[in-house]
Image (cartoon, rainbow, N blue to C red; front, side):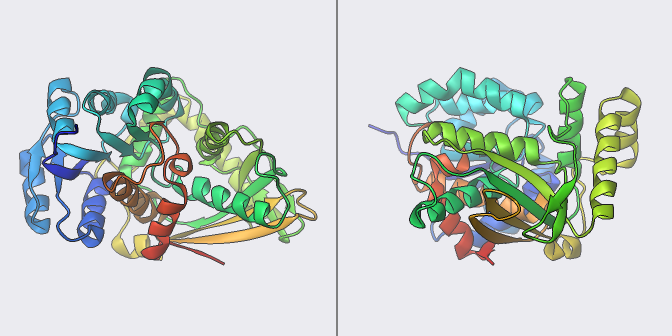
Length: 368
């Protein structure tokens, strides 16, 4: 018999730039009588956020396993904005597993995610505990859109439920960058992990009359989609790129990404990013966040003559508004016991159509 929890959901890392936005989203979309709280290590910074939204706050240091265990024991689900997750996330995940508490976060740190899978997947699958790392722009939009696209392929008789033609995704985005995202990337680079996409090339998409360049988020999004396919016993391939208006733009973006990857790979380059980039807790203006967007076009089969083409429009700045909307709706779904199974899962394999519908209901995404 499950012991009743004091809260339905706790937001950990609520005082950072993304955490404050997530608190705003929770206050906006939490259902009536929903019991939620915020948490972090600084009472001074937590108190005004808690007062703004009229919710309790918990002082809990992410590096303290005992504090994380106490936090996890008090709630049905936790969502975390406290990255870099390879540095700060493990005690909280371990505590959620120990206390049978559902969990989601914003990580795009593939090596850390693989450690979670190796350490916790089988145990969580047996006990019905759902852990969903990569629940922000990494990688909810890609994972859910590919999931939806495959269903349409099946309905049109272009896939048989287990196999499908190769799928290519092309993002066209506008948005800013926050300090938390930047410093998570720096932490990955400092640990010796390359941030360079596997396919550093440009090319043309004849059916769209556009060009493509490498996409910085592609390695994470492709890995998440591949894990979804593995969990669902589906044979399908997915590759992701940035959509460009011209060959010149594609070449420029390819070159810029090579330079950024090279700088991230050097100690001096990381020093420059730390010195001149946004600091943790900093991000773009509200006007830029609301003006941002991410459009994803999926093609099945050859780029010259795809069997099916579908586009999805995500509103808001990808690294900030889209990310927080995805995380908050994931947390609300977990708190409502909407997860389909336990384990270290992906958004689509854990929540699938229910999460996609939640995001449609708040006008976060639409089909175009």
